[in-house]
Length: 597
Image (tube, rainbow, N blue to C red; front, side, top):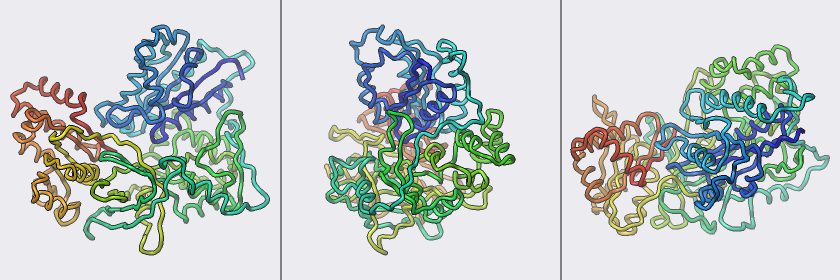
């Protein structure tokens, strides 16, 4: 390796930023560049003054917050006493990952870019703003940005004359080697690594709590198009604590049939055990993966074979292929010119890793096991808004889960990994335990007494508001206004009896919108406009907080438009003044959103 030191630091909440960082490591290795990848909070931030070249890969969470694994770094880098020349020797670039449906789109990346400039750093490129909402995903922005990045990196930091870009058809060395064991270790040793029978501190991703599933109940009508489940867990003795607005992380598994299909496609023995060893010093093995581990367990609980692969998957697959026709097609998909073809084959129909491997059987059968963790991402935990309060349901945790299933042009329906796995579990047939842990969510509710809250939660977006209402009612707060929308009263009106009972007690003002019960569709934004005087009075006169949760496609923009109209009609504000009023609510966290694609 040449002396050029490239450092990639990431802040990742769901793993996407870490995946992009690993892509940077691979591309750096192809260019014979030394490259280290670390989470921001695991890197000694005082050492930044000695780094010549740093790429920051940062996600934005919630209301413009940094991910959990970069919060310590975030506090340090914004210290006021840092000299303005602290980073004057450092060239840097910032790659952001966000969702344009949120008001503070890529806020962390933008703010970090500005701060690094203030501290004397030299930006190689403008900040990259990856967007989950783009049809091609974040790669639509990341691909051209990375092309420009390598040109910049190799300008001020040129390669020695005897080194150059490795040919695309040559596979880079695998990150790990799998050392297969001749003897099968005891099952007990493997189980102990995962279950965490002697927990140290609160449950976490490294040591989740195996919660007993108590109930798994469908709460939509039998004729309703969507299966939605209310699932309850017993968290007695877990040390888990949460408040309204927090989320639970659940670690799902692949189905047994998919695991079997995958092992057959790659010619793997599911009962074979192995240990994992990094090829390079300083590269840690995945912390959650037990050592030793069976192929069965690796594929079932760790490899996300149900995910939609990214372009780097096809790039490595092409390098590993020895079949001329399959290799030619894979090279087409992995090239920048083949982006539309890849989108048509893979992204739009949501074709999974497993299905791609089955489409290229000769290539799949020749994949060396060492490359499994380079090729396939680890299963990431899925986050669900907690739909209950400990004040109302002690030692219990409830979630509302829409079972994801939809049709594309592919024959087999697309199914969400975690939601379908959860739906398949039946505690009535015997004990069921699910690995979970809790973290702070994107919604924070007012701590000051008598502050009203207006909550807009159509569909399953109502889940965090049920927790908030239960918590506030238990604390004696009655200023709770809920706008709930669904299709039909008798099919998907979640917690109808509970809301009506609270309304009778004077603890809740409930406003409903049943979109399919009349010829003209009625949504929550229409109900907001109808009750404009109430909304304006609560916000402007009583200092209410406004919350919105649900699907990101149209609803957030429609609700924001409805609020702007209310500010103009009821508050007498001009168009620009109404927009400024809404922006002020967002800036002071009196307007918070939690949306998903």
